[in-house]
Length: 55
Image 1 (cartoon, helix red, strand yellow):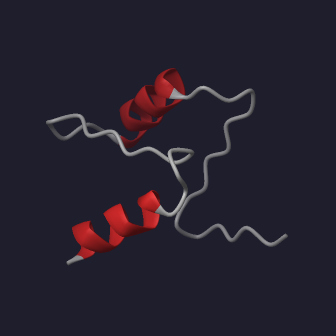
Image 2: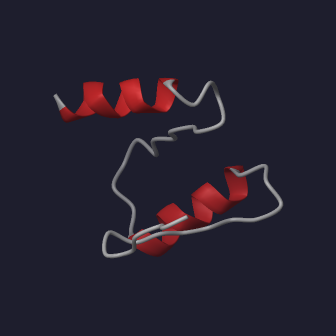
């Protein structure tokens, strides 16, 4: 399932990547705000589905 694939992907990052669930549906801006509040880094990068990170 997609949920299982997501959990397996997150585990590969050894705690660097975290998934937070709100328990209810929230909009895009509220979801990003919650993510920013829970973040611990100095820099926050938000990518949309149409963005591609090329390094």
